[in-house]
Image (tube, rainbow, N blue to C red; front, side):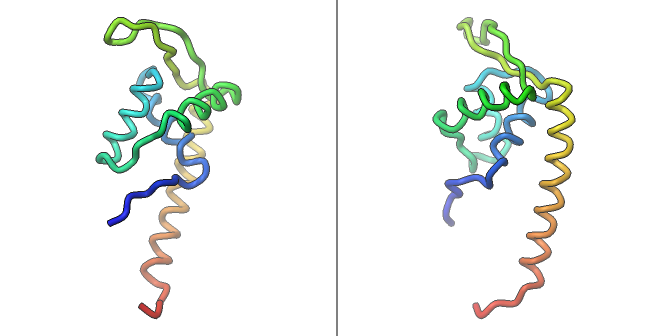
Length: 113
């Protein structure tokens, strides 16, 4: 079975917001949380993760502060803003609707296979 290499546009942002919904996380921990939550299927490349974190911060959906990580290193921790919580709720509803529609289409569309 092939591994997905590209996420649906906007999915990474939603996964990042979901990863920090419970508690503030630094970038590396966010990537690890996404990997673990997906059963090791989704591995977020730092080259995609950090620009998306910065964009979410610029959008006002995340705020960041410098803190010491669990290994006592300075790291930038991200947490949801109130606007980020609203955006995440809306995006989760959109994702559920989309996933449901795709699932339905896969069950009902006939093919030549």
